[in-house]
Image 1 (spheres, rainbow, N blue to C red):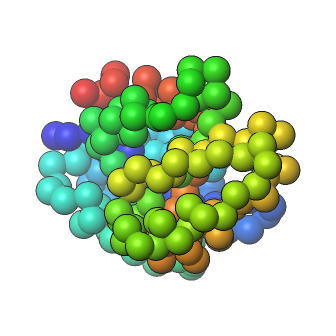
Image 2 (spheres, helix red, strand yellow; image 1 turned 135 degrees about the vertical axis):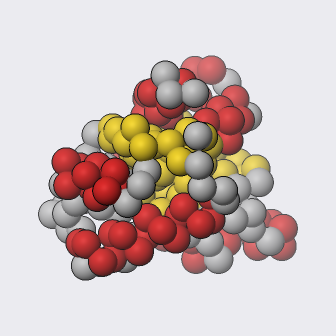
Length: 179
């Protein structure tokens, strides 16, 4: 059994795409995933599976959501090592890192698209695109940021989901207990 973390994009936000975590845990457990636990209502799931391939797990969870809840949701599956690498590779100072967002991408974007996207800048906002993650720091808070997921998804031709520093720390902690 291997421990995985699934990150869902855009559920339980503003009353849209509502997913009860109790129902979701039961659905995933019934589908054969083990030791399923969720963290907060925004789509963070830690589970164990013997199934190989993160892409297979992403597709499986997406289909379960579509069949049970009736809507499509991008799902990003990482193992603990992946998440730890993303967390540790944050290029910002420790002070900025604690106020940063980690945006996981569905795949590594084309280098030309990264170069093009990197030309755009706003005051008090910094980002670095490394492999399949965007490290994003906004001095005035995420809610006031000019950059958003839609910009990066459009420019990089990827799907994306973000988690803040505290959520990343908690997911790493929760997944450690299952390793």
